[in-house]
Image 1: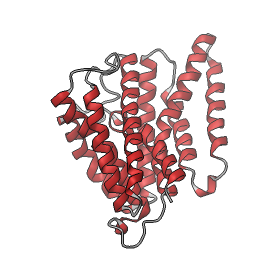
Image 2 (image 1 turned 90 degrees about the vertical axis):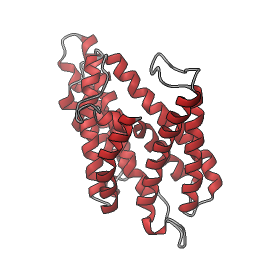
Image 3 (image 1 turned 30 degrees about the vertical axis):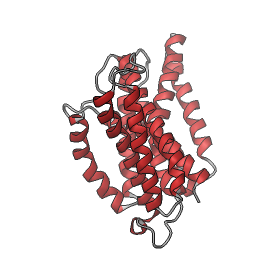
Amino acid sequence: MRRRVTSALIFVPPLLLVLALGEPWFGALIAAFVAVGAWEAGRLLRAAGYAAPSWFIVPAALAVALAVASPAWLSGYGDLAIAAVLVATGAAAFRHADTKVGLAAWMGTAFGALYAGMLGALVRLEQVAPAVPAGSAAEQLGPERGWVLLLILLVWSYDTGAYLVGIALGKRKFLSHISPSKSYWGLVGGLVACTAVAVAGLWALGQPPVLGLALGPVVGLVAQAGDLAESMLKRAAGMKDSGGLIPGHGGILDRVDSFLFAAPVAALYVAAFIR
């Protein structure tokens, strides 16, 4: 927990500053996170036995992030951009004389690009977010800042609830072959905390609070899945951290792993159910 708190103290101030400034600064920060995260993903994949070059993963991940973010000028062509990334990563693998190595390189490079590029959904969330009704508690934040801030609070509340309840009551572990610290009680504590924040957050944004009873558990579960997915990747690579950007506190993927899964799911939920 101390490690997470220290990391939060390092990342939160600039993140909140950029969020307050809005676009294009927020998009630029997410692009920087995607680039570094893709480089780290390439490092982990190579250690896990996939010949995935970081120099190719980084621009491919940025292309995926751009497609996922779906700016107005790319509207209608995002799926084609992702298809182009899959074609390009496949063609790049032709250079390997051993076809097994080439296939592993294609799979690893395409996966790394798609994996890191999903963070672009944070920008997409800004675009699909509905207006905040006049008189709402979060009216001054506006839809872009308000909904992104809510997602950040949901992920952090899940982490905090899972840690505190897991420490107090966690006896039975789940998926210990991936992460030995996860417990069923921690999962319950995280979901309760995340749901409470979702209910309060939707009320503040002028939406029916009852929708938080679904949004909270959904975001909590996918945030946990994102954390476990990166743990699985690191375990396969035989590494403790994704990188050393912050000495003693890991890399970018270690800090945004939950958001890689939570951001696209939250954006889809908002687009489908929030008006």
